[in-house]
Image (cartoon, rainbow, N blue to C red):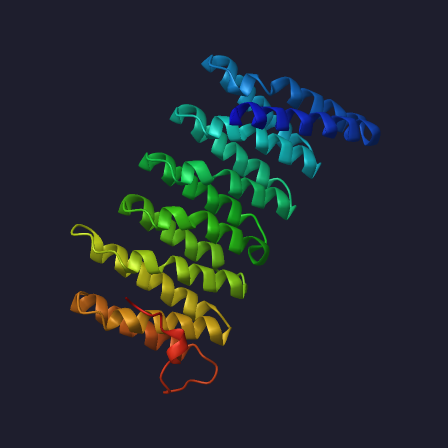
Length: 282
């Protein structure tokens, strides 16, 4: 029933868009009409039909300058992106990235990130890694100040993964998302997300992923020009540097990171980090 309603909703959306575009721009109306004709084909059980339709939606999404048509193309691509077949979903994800990168419209880019939610939480590692790569693709073509928070939210799921083959690329993606963004909300959200890998207690690869997370927190703390983000980053690192279960090497690395963040402050201070910046541990 849910799928029927979803298809019906998309059909209504496409139909309304077609009428609106027809009144405004004949070429846009033609593109919307073509997307309507491809609605069932992108969901076909026949692989050849599905792949050809996916590539045509991809082409229409790239060819148009109209953000609304790009959004419609992205919505259609969500179907193959949710496929269980890697040879269908992986190209569809890169199609989303290309469409998102073909415009400066931030709504199109954010929608693409939102539609990557399913592959970002998939059970297959290769698919999740491709999805992380696609997020990086979209971020690298955007105004980071506008896109950073949406990218951090998108990457939260793979950063919390128990598989280091997924979470390590995602941690790097978090750093990439906020780099140069000057977005205080994104910095703070990124620091919240990174507590999951810092808490890793995996017997194999646990120290590696914690070290990656320490590096990420350090870069964010150094990068941010806001005192609140710097204080929070130092507080997070100090709380883990004193954790009894951490290896001496990891503790030392966390202490070095705190020193680097403190050194990046305009007015270096030897005062302790405010208690409010140190996360409470159970």
